Length: 244
Image (cartoon, rainbow, N blue to C red):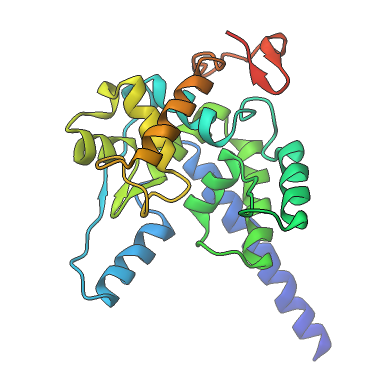
């Protein structure tokens, strides 16, 4: 009996690793049209008696404003091009702050971690989900380029109620395409990302405008996002922030 159980466990583990590797490799090349969060939000809308709303159009990186990746790095992960999925300095600082019990809790999720969570997992704060997030983050950092991670991130991130990705938010909040978003538009969108269902880039509050200005200032220290195959010169980085 013990032998049978052990055999089932081995097959289960092997199947898990094979299937997850397969999906990561597939998404290295194919568009991500739907994510678990999209289905979860649709189910929540139906459960709340609302009409189902899902706006999402996949667009390639060359059809997204050059300011968009810079804005999200300035807001979410300034060391995105330098780390390998995890920003240990940010994790240490967040842990010290949270242990102090002062103010709101700080997070330290990188763009790579958020992409892994958006594409392969469900929202939540359990240790099990966090463990899977670490696993998938390591996989996409291994098999995807930074450009691909950013492309998937900008296409899959929730940017409003029923709105996912840069092209959808550009259309429904700005009346534009993703490629036509201005530097200020991109900074405003990035300002909402901590909680896009609470903060709106369509009807921004004074707090959002303040965040927008802060992000635009930080964007001055981050160079244009490199194209596929281009590298970041570490000499342009000072104190974890990019020089012009």
